[in-house]
Amino acid sequence: MQRGRRGPWRDRIRTLLIVAAVAALALVAINPSGARSLVLGHGNSSGSHEDSSDSTPLTPETAQPTAAPDAAADPDIPTTSHPFAGSPALNWAAGADAIVLPHAEKVGDVTARQVDAALRATKAYLVGTNLDPAELRGGYPDAALHVVDPINGGPARVKAALSSPSAKTDPTVWLTRYDPHEVRLVGDVIKVRGRMTFTKSDHESVRVHTDYTYVYAFTKAGNGDGTVQRLIARRVVDTQWYPRGAPGKVQLVRIDAYFGGSGCEHDGYLHPSPSENSGVNPSGPVTDPYDRSKPLDKPGTCGVASRT
Image 1 (cartoon, rainbow, N blue to C red):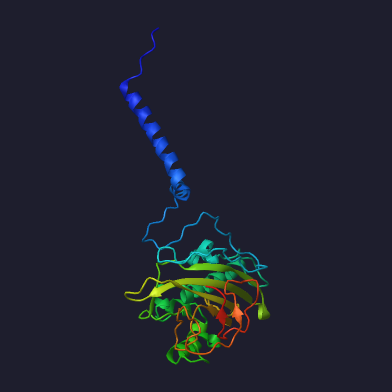
Image 2: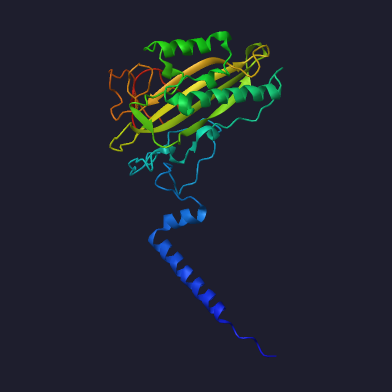
């Protein structure tokens, strides 16, 4: 039986495959990281304002770290295309997805469903005070305060701070806010790192403890020079829900905050600036804003960040 001859179309396919293989090898030789990005789907366009990295993304934080993140030996300079370059936050998760709820379980007389509702309300408060675009630009935090039980005066104190900001009533202790006439966010990525836990508290209530660090990248509003300045806000917020409390709402029982890369003014806004001590002399120590292994040192003081 005579074996059929290979047609011309098969020769053309073979030629195309050889050319494609040679081109792929050339791409790997010239730009190995770019080739990997194409294969893994991690390509980054110049307008996305999202950093890409060859490193493995960090897993969610489940316990208090034992040390600060290592400093880069040769830190990259942040740009509008890569605003988190040279920062430990580069491989952190971003946005609301980074606030991972623990598995809800029964606590005393509080059912697992009630615990879950308290966890979700707490997350809604954190998102509404640190990640909501309108609130960040100075808008009123309606979504955040919607889940706060007014019984202990939390919403009233926030409203009073917003109407009359001062060193004693500073709304930035409660909310991350910036002046859109001064600066603008680079893209829509906000890096987040931290954890949420819960425990039984007094009067058969459940107490939710949160400790999160948020990293923002800013550039000047209008026609700036493209310089990127990062601002780091670490917030420790505790909420509590009582069986007789308002359904779907939590009480604010602890609010602490520390900021790195911000000026020390008390006009109701945070001011990302290369000179973070503008406006008033610093009163706190030099602190690594990325060090989550230590408790907040004198929250509310105006210190100096060792890096941003």
